Amino acid sequence: MLIAQISDMHINERGAASIGGADAIGNLEACIARINALDPLPDLVLATGDLVKDGTPGEYATLRGIVEPMAPPLYVIPGNHDIREAMSDAFADADYLPRGGALMNYTIEDHPVRLIALDTVVPRAPHGLMDAERLAWLEARLTEAPERPTVVFMHHPPFKVGIGLMDGMRCSGGAGLGAILASNRQVERVLCGHVHRAVHVRFHGTAASGCPSTAAQLDLDLSGEVNPGAPWSDEPPAFMLHLWQSEAGLASHVVQL
Image (cartoon, rainbow, N blue to C red; front, top):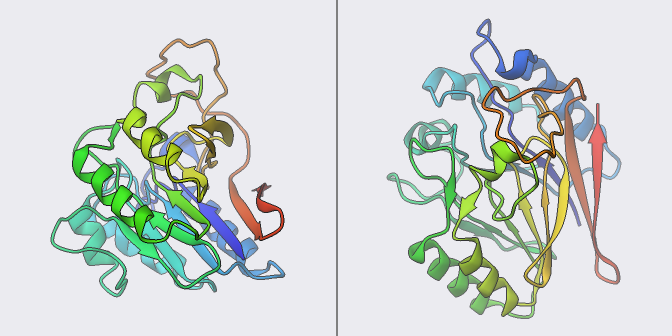
């Protein structure tokens, strides 16, 4: 099984300013072209949040037009730049998404690896949250299939990455999430977005990783200081490929454009 992961696309309306001065639209179009040219073609694409820049209907309409040519099925979750209601309207044909402003948690069942989507968004806040409701939902889903290899995907990382700005807006409730993962050993990986960089850590008995952005990468500032100016690097847009092999587990690759 081959999983492509795109993240933090921050799509703006055509002609509007992009995040970090990047060509967010052109970069995503290039990523999709690269994904469509892969051999083998990924079984699916996970988009781990911050799909658009400001959460407006016009931005989501632009995004839908861009992703229309994508060959593999696309599964989306919200990030802190997304608005659930507008996102739900834009993806009205995505029958896997909960509706009515509910948390956009869901599972993908019909592949060798089971995938569990977690909505970590706190409306109008940059940080994420795994509260009692979300933790209980996740534990119930994991209890359903304790023997199936599973990947959990979410926007906000529940761990520190060493970049002060992003650590201040990570996912709260990481200890509760970690306790659930530690007792459910079928979780092969926790896939995150939000940090605009590739990063890999051990996390409560499993592995967790952050995905680069298709739009713009954050500068690698490991001083621990909080720089609210969000300095951007000149690194290229990128996405990730996660290859599942039953005898080896999940092998992950960063694909830069």
